[in-house]
Length: 147
Image (tube, rainbow, N blue to C red; front, side, top):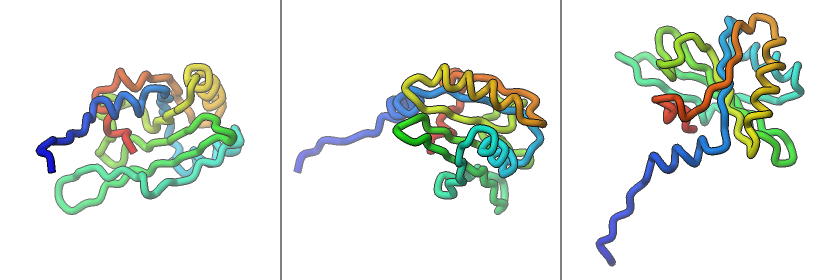
């Protein structure tokens, strides 16, 4: 048995995860389940809650703070969409995005055009105050989005 040591390169793993992706930040007062329903109706998506991917934030005391994650993969190896709820009570998944309530990650070989079109369509949903495109590499805590 050799004495070689294996190590996990987290930075490389992050880069690969976000390599072909863009983020769409959304500000709105709509609850997450209703937003998913509205997107599904408008765009023909099928966002489904992925409870195994829900994100549990560390909190003080014994309170549970869980942020739900929803996913939809377009057929025929199309784009993959992941919707994150960014805040619950006073807890935030990405503190640098204080004005946003939700984030949709678009993973595709050509995420720019798909994300731009998605932003245009989502702006048609009532109660959407803002939909802006964000480069994941501009976020300091993007590792919180790793699911």
